[in-house]
Length: 144
Image (tube, rainbow, N blue to C red; front, side, top):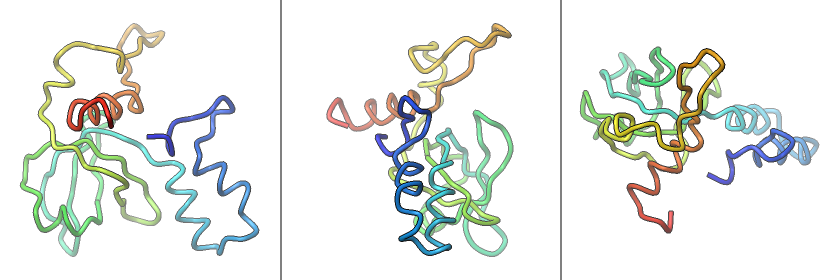
């Protein structure tokens, strides 16, 4: 969580690292780290295996589908399973970072809690960093 939470200047630890170390990194390392700096957390549903490799997931918060390259999920993920996951896109596909949290939709149905922030439109917007923290805490306990 600490890697992705924005600081006062709005950047996360990964973006600051790239900014400070850019001259020491290869172009490929910069590309991957910059993609990681843009990672997003959401609740995904496993839809189906990808035609070549990986898995198609639908994003239940932001909408749309992503092609996730994750060997473990490809071999053991069951269609229809919901999971909390932080993903980033280094190329035409997405990769996962950190921990996958198998879940039900109850965390989203139990009420807004601190993860929901009102928008000017009056519709709730989900603070996905807060949602990630809540899901990790609910799954792994207060020490997470």
